[in-house]
Amino acid sequence: MTDRESLDRSPQTEPAVREVDCAIVGGGAAGLSAAINMGRMRRSVLLVDERDRFGWRHVVHNYLGFPEGIRAVEIRRLGWHQAARYGVRLLIGHVATATREGDRFQLRIERLPEVPWPGAPPRDAEMARMFGEVPDSGSLEVLARAVILATGVVGHFPEFPGRDECVGISLFWCIHCDGYESIDRAVGVVGHDEEAVETALDLLDFSNRVTLVAGRPEGFSVPASRLADLEASGIPAHPYGVAEYQNRDGQMQALVLDDPARTRIPVEHVYTVRPSMAANDLARQLGVALNEIGQVIVDTNQHTNVPGVLAAGDVTSPHDHQLSAAVHEGNQAACAANYRLYRPEQREPGAEDL
Image: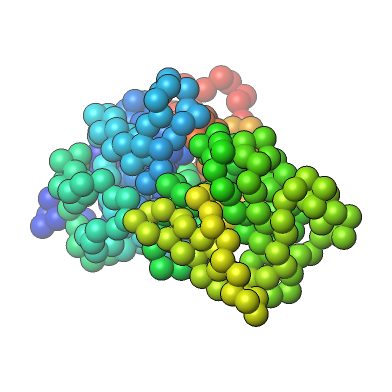
């Protein structure tokens, strides 16, 4: 029985463990790019998508070929459709554990409930079935010859009521992606460190109405000279936390400071500057090397230090949070994983067994 046949059997007759050539964890741009390219190489592929709540609501304006921009949720929908054309099987779920079993990798996947989430495409569950989502319930065991980690990062935004509706509409973190949309807007930057100061100063290229708020009661963690730079540039800097992020229907309205006067700063756009953390739990389980801030270390072909495990997108050490970079890295990881799956006679004599 081939790997593809074992994957396609019905739930009533299939074995307890499914076998595939490649399991891809993460359904963002990097994971979808990897899945499409692995599918085109006629590999059996399972793509596990946790339906990241962030990153799919906003409009992407800086991706080549879309002069009017394209909704990120539409990129996801088109990516699913494209991957399904090449036989990729899709599963909305969470990979709970990953272990190495000889020259293969065993993944235990838990299904996620089919519930609406902010920014989800309409009739998401129906779309999943249409495009070949694996129809399992409960947990699923998968044995894969190669694994591509495209798990992304978490923690860009603070918690507050209405946040999910604002992400990508009036709440941002990437000036390269969304700074242009802030032209002539009242912009608030929330952050306490040098990166926050630089972000506030950089936003002056788009608007002369920029305010910086530390976002914590301890105030700023930069030298007084940097606060002087802000003042000289006309950027008010408030060394307080944020008591309330006022918003309505996806539109930020004001930052209410946690100061004695409960100062209210009207805003239209807010950029949050805070450490994001790579979603690296599976990488740790597999013994993958991480850098000092927890991102997966990869080479130029997206290989990790563990043979058969590759990584792409924001979870990796060279990440830059750009859609174009994620698509490239996903393609690169697919090419490298496909080479690993070649039969010996397909390779150049003496070539390294990656």
